Image 1 (cartoon, rainbow, N blue to C red):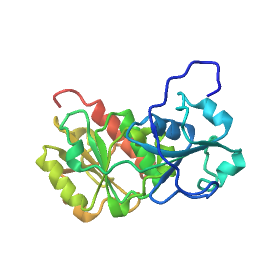
Image 2: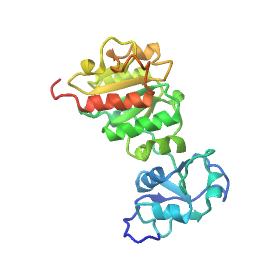
Image 3: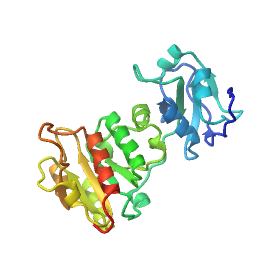
Image 4: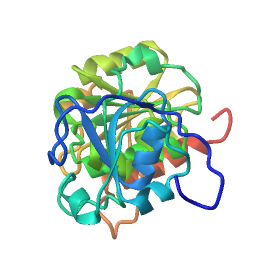
Length: 266
């Protein structure tokens, strides 16, 4: 890699490329990521198996690390890279094709630590929102996010770009039945708080002393009735009457901050 400063080795494993040069789509079962933070985090993640990196030379130089000598890189210009990603996606000269991360089970992420909430998303389908929530989850040291497999975006470039690297560090658990997952969290000692604008109690007053599962629904529709029934409490954020609601990713960030800064023993 060119550059003046000495760079550390990127730890990811390179895999064998499947699919042809300039195919314009990910190979079977593969995930395509783009943007410096998303690609760099994936390259640094030893749990990722990588297939191929398409890049401009400037994009490779921007990475905070040294690619292995045998890493499969194909240099391309900006217009070529644009054909490999979603329309108008800001790829920043880097497009990585890799294997999806291994599936996780809820038991894998339950740790019961008071200051490490688990974020449960009910039908939040916009990949930009899921990625932004993942970024906030990383910032406030959440233990994981949990989604229902049928009502969540797939792992991919838009989520990864919005998450700004957090896709590689925040465990993402996909479940078949969200209500059952909430039952399992209750059995593990989590207090399940659903954010709802119509709730009478504010989040600060609803927070317990123990571990929290924070439940958020899709914008507009909110949480489904069955999910609401599996919450121990509903709470709202104390926003001004001048604004009806917050974007779900903004609400998640505010709620995670409130959980992280609650007084000890409250």
